[in-house]
Length: 215
Image (cartoon, rainbow, N blue to C red; front, side):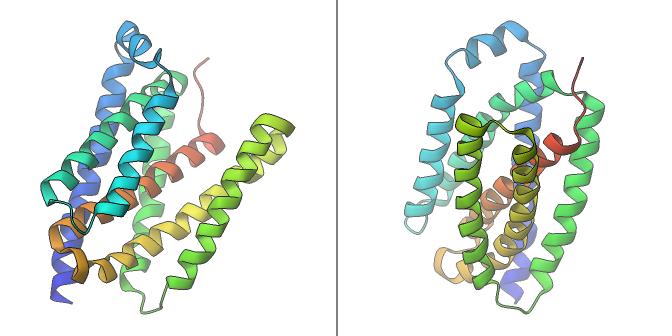
């Protein structure tokens, strides 16, 4: 339990660092229109592919990976996400972004606290929400290319909020299991990476539901 107590502060510190990198880089890029246009002109797809590659590498090679490499990949991922986030700073009011960020942080903190303190085995929850995530992705693709239905889009967004709330509790709890196998440093960074993904996805979906766009 002592090890757990030591890894969690490091994990949440890395989570904070990752979110800070993303939002600062995104906001800074949004303030430079020509540069943002030039970078994003290559398309979001190449950036998404690089992010997927990083996520796969972290998942497959984590046990054998050097802790420094893990940190570098995490930071690169956060910067890439910040680049795509520059569009959000242009599309939505800053006051709305701040409000949604605070709401996301409060929800995140409450669910993370549950994931940390609960004595329940959340393994089954992981299986359920993973299946739900696959269904969500398929549903979003079908709606984007076939139905293009606003009501269905709203429903999928709400389902997305529920799924990533579940992932927050699951990923916080999962760090306890990873610790003996990959060590404190890598467990902290990898745990932060998983929670970073949960936070960003929850933030985006709450923004879709309640965000106020620029006129």
